[in-house]
Image (cartoon, rainbow, N blue to C red; front, side, top):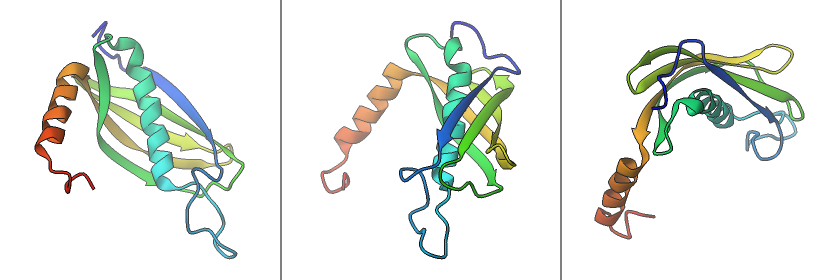
Length: 139
Protein backbone atom coordinates (compact mmCIF):
# COMPACT_ATOMS: atom_id res chain seq x y z
CA UNK A 1 0.00 0.00 0.00
CA UNK A 2 1.13 3.52 -0.70
CA UNK A 3 -0.55 4.47 2.57
CA UNK A 4 -3.30 2.92 4.72
CA UNK A 5 -6.91 3.92 4.05
CA UNK A 6 -8.03 6.59 6.50
CA UNK A 7 -11.36 7.01 8.23
CA UNK A 8 -13.59 9.33 6.25
CA UNK A 9 -12.06 8.67 2.83
CA UNK A 10 -14.95 8.66 0.38
CA UNK A 11 -16.02 8.61 -3.24
CA UNK A 12 -19.17 8.85 -5.32
CA UNK A 13 -20.45 7.07 -8.40
CA UNK A 14 -23.43 8.25 -10.43
CA UNK A 15 -25.68 6.27 -12.71
CA UNK A 16 -28.70 7.14 -14.82
CA UNK A 17 -31.49 4.59 -14.72
CA UNK A 18 -32.12 3.20 -18.19
CA UNK A 19 -32.65 0.01 -20.21
CA UNK A 20 -29.29 -1.49 -19.20
CA UNK A 21 -29.83 -1.29 -15.43
CA UNK A 22 -33.57 -1.51 -14.82
CA UNK A 23 -35.60 -4.50 -13.70
CA UNK A 24 -36.30 -7.08 -16.40
CA UNK A 25 -39.89 -7.72 -15.31
CA UNK A 26 -41.28 -4.22 -16.01
CA UNK A 27 -44.58 -4.30 -17.86
CA UNK A 28 -47.80 -2.28 -18.26
CA UNK A 29 -48.48 -2.46 -14.53
CA UNK A 30 -44.93 -2.69 -13.09
CA UNK A 31 -42.90 0.48 -13.73
CA UNK A 32 -39.33 0.25 -15.03
CA UNK A 33 -37.08 1.03 -12.04
CA UNK A 34 -33.45 0.55 -11.05
CA UNK A 35 -32.62 -3.10 -10.36
CA UNK A 36 -31.06 -3.88 -6.98
CA UNK A 37 -27.99 -5.69 -8.39
CA UNK A 38 -27.02 -2.57 -10.35
CA UNK A 39 -27.50 -0.38 -7.30
CA UNK A 40 -25.25 -2.64 -5.23
CA UNK A 41 -22.65 -2.74 -8.02
CA UNK A 42 -22.38 1.05 -8.08
CA UNK A 43 -22.10 1.22 -4.30
CA UNK A 44 -19.18 -1.21 -4.64
CA UNK A 45 -17.63 0.91 -7.40
CA UNK A 46 -17.77 3.96 -5.11
CA UNK A 47 -16.04 2.02 -2.31
CA UNK A 48 -13.36 0.78 -4.68
CA UNK A 49 -12.74 4.34 -5.91
CA UNK A 50 -12.53 5.68 -2.35
CA UNK A 51 -9.43 3.62 -1.54
CA UNK A 52 -7.88 3.36 -5.01
CA UNK A 53 -5.33 6.13 -4.30
CA UNK A 54 -3.94 4.03 -1.40
CA UNK A 55 -3.08 1.03 -3.55
CA UNK A 56 0.23 0.12 -5.15
CA UNK A 57 0.26 -0.97 -8.81
CA UNK A 58 0.28 -4.65 -7.80
CA UNK A 59 -2.76 -4.29 -5.52
CA UNK A 60 -6.52 -4.22 -6.01
CA UNK A 61 -9.48 -4.29 -3.65
CA UNK A 62 -12.16 -6.97 -3.88
CA UNK A 63 -15.58 -7.02 -2.28
CA UNK A 64 -16.07 -9.53 0.53
CA UNK A 65 -19.31 -8.44 2.24
CA UNK A 66 -22.42 -6.47 1.30
CA UNK A 67 -25.41 -5.63 3.49
CA UNK A 68 -27.65 -3.09 1.78
CA UNK A 69 -31.25 -2.05 2.25
CA UNK A 70 -32.88 -0.99 -1.02
CA UNK A 71 -35.26 1.63 0.37
CA UNK A 72 -37.02 3.24 -2.58
CA UNK A 73 -37.69 2.76 -6.30
CA UNK A 74 -35.92 4.95 -8.85
CA UNK A 75 -37.72 5.42 -12.17
CA UNK A 76 -36.04 5.44 -15.55
CA UNK A 77 -34.30 8.71 -16.40
CA UNK A 78 -33.34 9.69 -12.85
CA UNK A 79 -29.73 9.92 -11.67
CA UNK A 80 -28.65 8.04 -8.56
CA UNK A 81 -25.62 9.15 -6.56
CA UNK A 82 -23.91 6.30 -4.71
CA UNK A 83 -21.52 7.19 -1.88
CA UNK A 84 -19.06 5.12 0.11
CA UNK A 85 -17.14 6.32 3.17
CA UNK A 86 -14.44 4.43 5.08
CA UNK A 87 -15.58 3.76 8.65
CA UNK A 88 -12.99 1.13 9.64
CA UNK A 89 -9.60 0.11 8.28
CA UNK A 90 -8.05 -3.00 9.81
CA UNK A 91 -4.94 -3.95 7.84
CA UNK A 92 -6.07 -5.15 4.41
CA UNK A 93 -9.77 -5.14 5.36
CA UNK A 94 -11.70 -1.89 4.88
CA UNK A 95 -15.33 -1.33 5.92
CA UNK A 96 -17.53 1.32 4.32
CA UNK A 97 -20.80 2.99 5.08
CA UNK A 98 -22.65 3.10 1.76
CA UNK A 99 -25.68 5.11 0.72
CA UNK A 100 -27.52 6.15 -2.42
CA UNK A 101 -29.85 9.08 -3.16
CA UNK A 102 -31.88 9.98 -6.24
CA UNK A 103 -32.37 13.69 -5.55
CA UNK A 104 -35.75 13.05 -3.95
CA UNK A 105 -35.07 10.52 -1.22
CA UNK A 106 -32.64 7.98 0.16
CA UNK A 107 -32.58 4.95 -2.12
CA UNK A 108 -30.21 2.66 -0.20
CA UNK A 109 -27.99 2.42 2.85
CA UNK A 110 -25.80 -0.22 4.36
CA UNK A 111 -22.32 -1.63 4.88
CA UNK A 112 -19.73 -2.93 2.47
CA UNK A 113 -16.36 -4.55 3.14
CA UNK A 114 -13.38 -4.85 0.80
CA UNK A 115 -10.03 -6.63 1.12
CA UNK A 116 -6.84 -5.29 -0.41
CA UNK A 117 -5.12 -8.10 -2.29
CA UNK A 118 -1.97 -8.78 -4.30
CA UNK A 119 -3.27 -9.04 -7.87
CA UNK A 120 -0.59 -11.50 -9.06
CA UNK A 121 -1.25 -13.91 -6.20
CA UNK A 122 -4.99 -13.61 -6.85
CA UNK A 123 -4.51 -14.30 -10.58
CA UNK A 124 -2.46 -17.44 -9.80
CA UNK A 125 -5.25 -18.69 -7.52
CA UNK A 126 -7.86 -18.13 -10.22
CA UNK A 127 -5.66 -19.85 -12.84
CA UNK A 128 -5.24 -22.92 -10.59
CA UNK A 129 -8.98 -23.16 -10.10
CA UNK A 130 -9.67 -22.76 -13.80
CA UNK A 131 -7.06 -25.38 -14.73
CA UNK A 132 -8.52 -27.85 -12.23
CA UNK A 133 -12.07 -27.48 -13.55
CA UNK A 134 -13.44 -29.60 -16.34
CA UNK A 135 -15.05 -28.09 -19.47
CA UNK A 136 -18.39 -29.28 -18.07
CA UNK A 137 -17.80 -27.17 -14.90
CA UNK A 138 -17.26 -24.04 -17.01
CA UNK A 139 -20.77 -24.07 -18.41
